[in-house]
Amino acid sequence: MTDSEFMDLAERVLKGVEVSCDRLNDNTDVDIDNQRTGGMITLVFANRSQIVINLQKPLHEIWLAAKCGGFHYQFDGKQWMDTKGQGEFFASLSRHASEQSGETLSFSI
View (cartoon, rainbow, N blue to C red):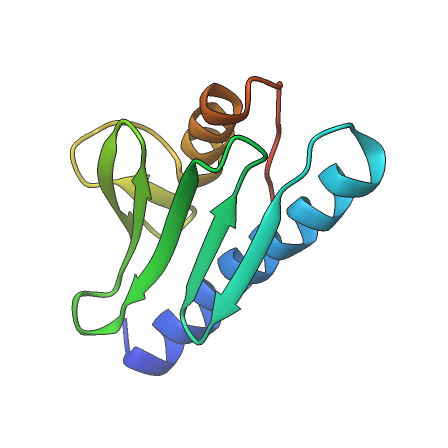
């Protein structure tokens, strides 16, 4: 994968996170503050816990840091999968965000 291909695919993920936050804020009682700076998004929940998602362009990876730990995702040709077999990016983000917020949350592209 070229750097340009990585950036196109990774940008879709970041945009999906932002759109999901907007949807969740509009349609649920959850309050997620999402702040984007370049290739990084910080999600801040009402209880002040955070999830940080950032792009690692040299490695062609997306990193996710949650309260329970850090995770690295690589594109397998179809979806972004954890490099240590912990699942798909949006399923993992949904699980971690739900745990941290105390609400059932679903993120997607």
